[in-house]
Length: 70
Image 1 (cartoon, rainbow, N blue to C red):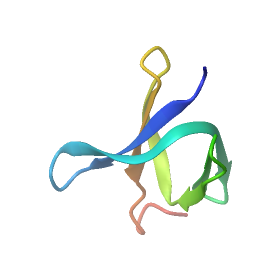
Image 2 (image 1 turned 180 degrees about the vertical axis):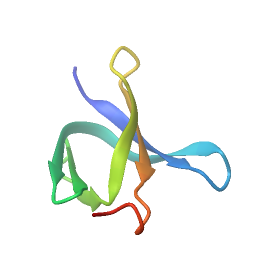
Image 3 (image 1 turned 60 degrees about the vertical axis):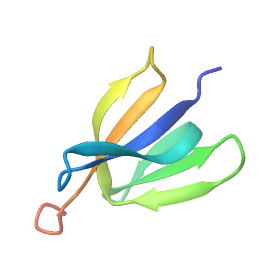
């Protein structure tokens, strides 16, 4: 199994929150990330990867602020 749970780092509270489970595809598209999981759910989010922990099957994202988005 190569899926990972994706968490969104919340700067305002300094914590991570579960965003999507069992993700098997992460594709950068036009400054956003397209995510798809093994259940066929799809999400797109204006974020960047903050951390990958492949052994722990975790991807941590952080929101891209409008001022940072090209």
